[in-house]
Length: 138
Image (cartoon, rainbow, N blue to C red):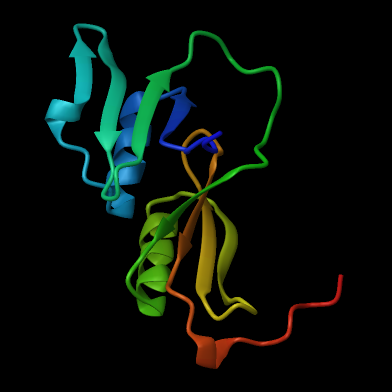
């Protein structure tokens, strides 16, 4: 039996325009042709990311019962400096930082921000073997 292949992520959002603005500020290419709009506003985004992953944004029909999130939607960026630049740019626009940029034990630079719905969005550089350290004691 072939193992399942993760090929799509669906984000349910409260404010579609705020979510589109956040992910565009992050650097995600969201062309207008990917957004379903009607007279009442934007309702759906249908993206295919480089590499083939499908990402949809959908407006929620009702508020979720829980709060917070345990998932992180992570984006790979080109460099350690890009992690800091994106983090500074998005926090400068008023988006909360859940984890300021730091050097991970596996050799990457990593930060976590919150999108307008409180979803955690990670930004990570490639791992540099020369920067690896022992994992922390837990």
